[in-house]
Amino acid sequence: METDPKELADRLQAATALLERTLNWLEAQQETLTGEVQRISATVEQSRREIELADKLAAVEKELSTLKANAAPAINPLRRTLPASTSEMLAKHGIADGPVDVRALDAALTGLSLEQRIAVKSQLLRTGAIA
Image 1 (cartoon, helix red, strand yellow):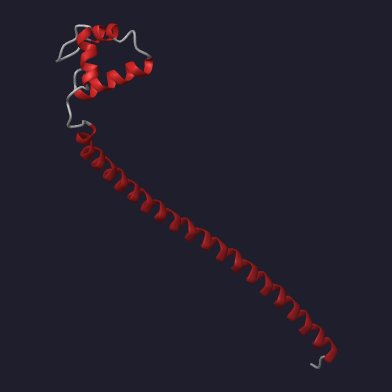
Image 2: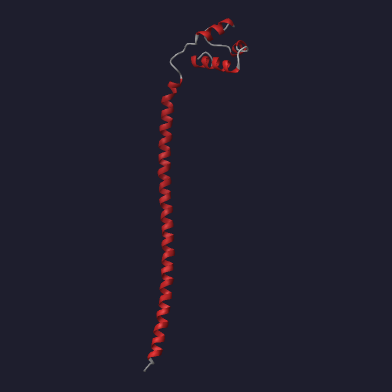
């Protein structure tokens, strides 16, 4: 069973070419699979990051609600008196100390500008004279 060396060389060359194509195909498959694994890993890591951010958000919201609860008394100032000019203006219209009737207050403030009416009402709100 003798074979021609040229024929043997041709067969080896064909086998080598087939092996090279197969190797290239396997490498391409490997790259594709590796890319999919990397995408899956990135998705898992992103989910972990989202969980971390959600935990941080919950902590910040809790801290904010605590700060708001502690700051609520600071919103109401300690001073509960009206400026003298406001007391005099209200006294001229028959509005004395204590709770103020809103209708009487509106009638007393008709001669003032909008900004002045807002200022007087905010002063009365701070002192607790109107609710």
